[in-house]
Image 1 (cartoon, rainbow, N blue to C red):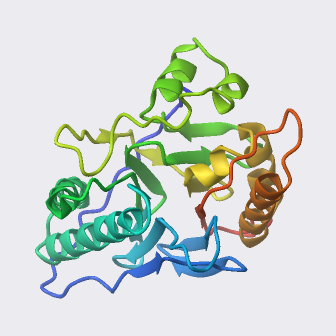
Image 2 (image 1 turned 135 degrees about the horizontal axis):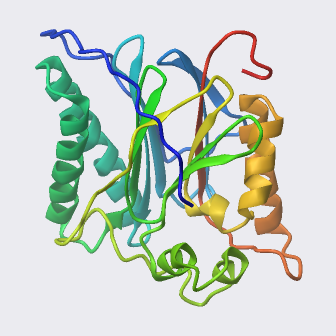
Image 3 (image 1 turned 90 degrees about the vertical axis):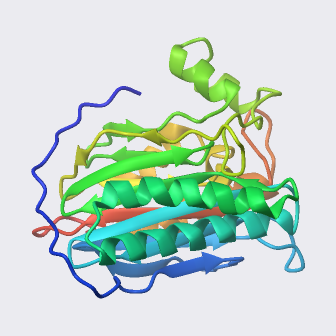
Length: 293
């Protein structure tokens, strides 16, 4: 969906020889409640759960990487290739990304350049596994009230305003994603299409390409959401948006996860239903006395 984007003036980061704080990874997780963290002048909530039993690894992985009081990187990877190759690919993708960003920022490099280099090195690392594994990668850079999305694959990024206006939604790198974006297919048709799960761009491919979005200025009640296809395959976008605008951050994430799980476990005629791993990361900037912040 086209978005109206505002670019805010950025502060020049001070150069430090010390690496940024350590990242927090959510790897092979099976959470029962959202993990809530203070991050870059706001709050982040993370949910990650397995689609199958405890003996089957969760191929999704998430990361929160604080850089300083106003800057952070949020990332989500969804592995391909079957267990355990998919889990290894998503883990390696995020660990490589974090290592590259922390090293580059300690040297005073621009965050955008560090993230792009992180994508490239993660792609090289996964290719070196040589086992057919691959991964999606969705990243949001936070600098004060400015967010910028980067992605490879069909892990989507969504930004929603207080009144439910969609300010940003990335396009899945897939035949159905491109068809919906071009108006050749509507979202409900795409959810049930036989080629729904074909992905045309992944970490681990020689021809991998990075899509970089424009900077988006966040208002105090805006919510940025990164989610694996365990969410998008089970809920319609209007159902997702309604929960993000209505609830405080932690409750919104919990409600989205529970609604997705209910669809997976109890298929109903006409409703999307696909069992899968499920990972959500939502971020909301803190400001004033915003309801639910």
